[in-house]
Image 1 (tube, rainbow, N blue to C red):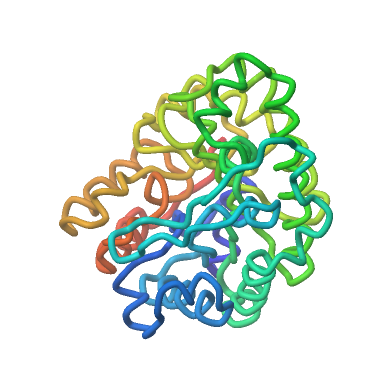
Image 2: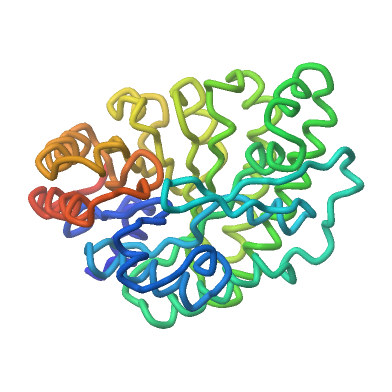
Amino acid sequence: MKGKDRIKAAFENEAVDRIPVGSGSVMIRDYIERTGASFPEFHKDPELMARISMLVSHDAGLDNVVIPFGMVNQAHALGVDVEWGNWEIGTKPSPKNHLDDPKEAKTENIADDDVIRTIVEAAKITVEESPDRLTTPLVSGPVTVAGHLVGTEKLMAMTIKDPEQAEEWFKIAAESAKKEIKALSEVGVEGIYYCDPTASGDLLSPKYYNDIVKDVVTDVVDYAHSRGIYLELHICGKSEEILEYMAETGADSLHIDQKVDLVDARKRAGDDVCLAGNVEPAKMTKDYSEVLKEAGESIAKGADYLKPGCGSPTGTKPKNLKALVRAAKRCCFHGKRV
């Protein structure tokens, strides 16, 4: 099977020749240095972004190609300035300032923003030049984007003191995501990695997620599906108490953190959704044998799509991405969940 078809089959609960293997964000030092790319140009140049991401996928044998290398893209489009970080020590782009009022958000021309345009152009390259793999651009989720816009600490207080305003920020984020998804669909993208680490159960209560956030996410999932796009939902941390609600959004896949037990996750999420994960990201910088062992454990516990529990760290060793693929091939055949 082609990698793209392998992932799609896992999302559809269809039999595959082996479990698919992928990654979240891939701002990996080794591969960036191999391309000769410089910082911060690889955040801003679609050709460099695409070349790095395709090199990671093709060298390691992954089934997906993932761009970009940070999560502040929608916040930038909505009017926040960006600090590009220091990739050599593993820091990723972050907001330099925040907004005070929802009316300050620049909601009209999201797809015309230079950062969003870079991502769309890079996605066009990867779709065309890696047609056997599923290009899965990272689009930030509503709670994370809202935190970028107003400040995460302020947002968390707002969810308690002024939940209606918090919800307004979430909806602004969701609308920006839909506009980015539309632009990506127009260049042939068929999968989205919808990443919302700030929606973690470590920060939000299960009741709040169910009552407020779930409907906002569901709206984005429905929109992606209307554009013919699969959507994988990722939330960091201890998310077991909200896995049922995550599944109820209609997401095609739930990418879960290494803190969550896959066996328990399957019981909570049900049999109708693909579970992706959940090798500990920190181990991707360590010994090959550790990664191979943990990958095998993830498969044995029921992972439908083998990935690190979050993005691959900057110091990830290429041989450790290859260990994920080796573990998947050892598994040989991975049938339907039901």
